[in-house]
Length: 245
Image 1 (cartoon, helix red, strand yellow):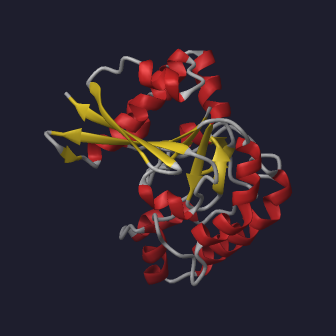
Image 2 (image 1 turned 30 degrees about the vertical axis):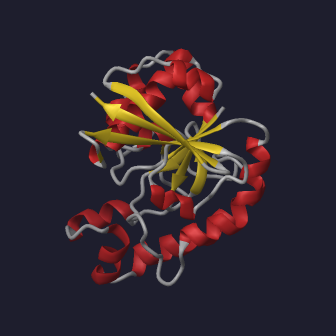
């Protein structure tokens, strides 16, 4: 089973791994296509106006802009799953998981970076900031990655079942060509957003701890605070609806 997962706006600084290079990320043959995005990003972070950087980063603190002006050629990296720092990642709590559970996440989970595109959770990336949905000048990363990476993602996934834990925005980066499963979370009959992030992290954590390999095993899992309410099936997508209790 392959799991698709969203990135986070928040990032941890630093890192102890070598700078970004062609072997840092999956699909090394497509690295030149990533560089097309990276080079435009670096050009804008180093020479853009404060107004342009606000549009890029989504933050108004101009002193913080300096954090993102260094080039990736010299910046240290860390595992992507450790770089991201947000609600889903807090509830995933990757650092306390066993080595086997971490390996499960590193190898089975595909993250969709707004800058780097589809990457494995265990791939190494530098610190960066790119607001979800933001263009780099006139360049739209999500359209670029969907055009050039979808075929390779389909080939990599092959016959594996797909659990899509992403927020809906990331369909713009990739939509599986094979049937896939999504989750919806209801509280008192209403769809939740903040808690959806938390429970996506929890589901990934529990899947890794149980080393599940199929949707059947996912449905058999006992996840604290969740009950399966219904399963909605369409031609290509199966949606598991959970009630938060």
